[in-house]
Length: 206
Image (cartoon, rainbow, N blue to C red; front, side, top):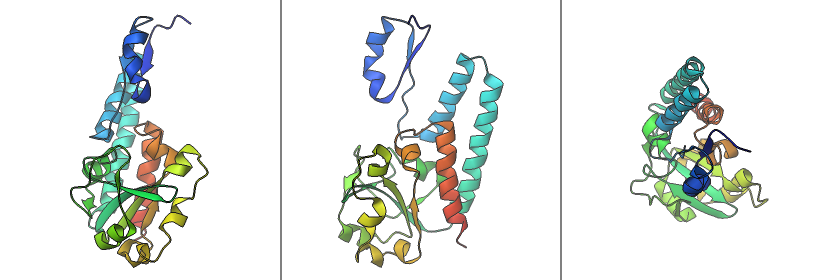
């Protein structure tokens, strides 16, 4: 194919050395440490690569506006806990995790401190969830993201222990757009949809 440039990232990033033998290659991997800032950096880099810096800057401004309005909607609305369901299993994510950018960028108040920063989250029980008692649950349905056909997040969380949490009692459970949040994390459009989902949910409360 004789490409002028090969872009790797995420799971393909270990192939950087191999692809560099074929053509100039760059690694555009993003992680969760400061995903929003990294998304903007990658956007500007792609703008420079294809000779459209002005268009990239305009998209970056849209991202900033989306972040600002979402942060305003979240402010003062209580604590939040980020969960991932994988069929019947539940894991939690904290400030240092791959989804920790929600805490840093939106200034979420974590319901629990010191959650293990594991790739697939810290395995938790429903008793843990009840005792944490978050005001909000931010939920990723991994089965939906990867199309595994396993039990969905709503069914997994619909039990007596979760029902005791403030989040469940008040209907403050936010189901994220799974593929955008889990697979296409850091993309311009996916990030806008993630922020819109959160903003809309939090805007429905006073």
